Length: 107
Image (cartoon, rainbow, N blue to C red; front, side, top):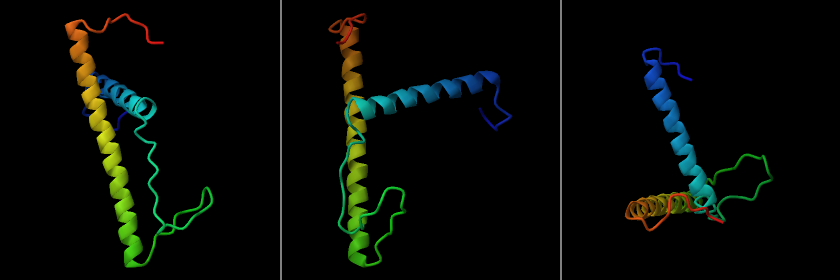
């Protein structure tokens, strides 16, 4: 679980449980919000077969186009993370106010 021998067993367990919280967050982001369903592409990258390594462009315009595509992907994923945080805050607020029943089953 860890190569850090200075951690106590309690610290190890705490760190390990935090892992599951982040995995749940990424699962929700992926499956519920579609946070990783981006389709940004640039003509600067040549088409390749599955499993082949990408060949980066060598010209300045191609490098700029690839950088723009990466920026668009990062922005999309960041916006999805913000949306997830807002939805989580709203859900927690509504549960505390009693608008959402805790035992309600979603169909």
